[in-house]
Length: 387
Image (cartoon, rainbow, N blue to C red; front, top):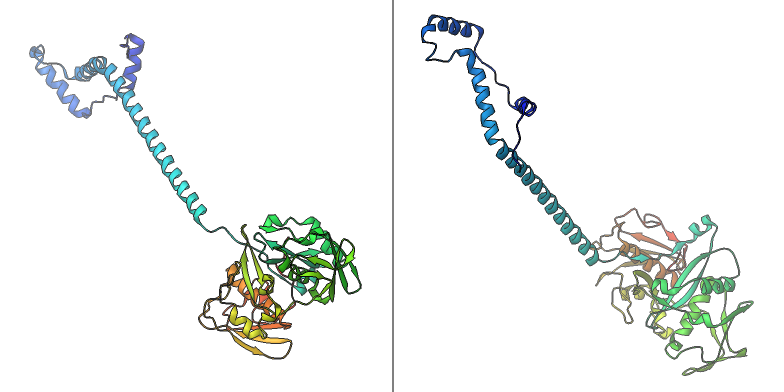
């Protein structure tokens, strides 16, 4: 730093910045000292007069300031720079800490399970309130091992028209599924018969065991159609690689336990055991037997929604109504998606066995999802609604 060149103006400015020098003596003390100085005026050359002390102190301060000012100013700048650097380091450290916390949170989010996109069924009364109709279309999982029924809200129309519309509009890859074999077909209807006309060789060998379940789960809803007639290039009967020529199938979905299927996406579906393409004769004959299967792991990616070794109390009131009592060991949560899926799976299983209403007991909840658990639940419609 260059030395300061002093002049009157700079001296005055620096003096203004010096701390004020005040004489702390009282007026009485000053008076006595002045009087004492008058009495000893002969010796005044040996002593400085008291009134000159403030001026002398000021002069000394000025000299000291002139000597040390450059160093003081340089040190002051260094101190200020040090403080700035220290503050900068603190800010940088805080930013790094915040960044580390943010990264840690991000990793936590990345490690956490993604939220499930669950496609629940509707209640018939809710559809009527919305003045909406519905349709279900069968799709295949990404390994072509399961039929995944997906339902859609629609306007009022002929059922076959609704199927054809959704086959064109919906992209199953959005929810981790494969295309439906029905996309290759020309689908029409004649009274209670659905006509599915497929080109020769349209059905792959892996799809063949699932085609009947897929077609049945698509067109048997609400008993609108009684059978499906298969055609190949306009001619009656489709020739399968293994089944040979098949002219028609009855449209009847058997009662079956329901399970959870998680697609490669974050989408979760409820799927009937019938969707595996197994022989309908192997399905449980009674609703209670189906419930007993629903705590077991199944093949082809079907997962249980009931806790292991769960025993539900079942009381069949009549052919339409049934009561189900939960054991004390099950603690339901109104905010748990898996608990809602469990309720839905039980309702859909009951519906597949012909029950129109289900009353749940010992749930320890007033409601879950759209259901009032202190009342009978009836009118469960469709499955895996996608919007």
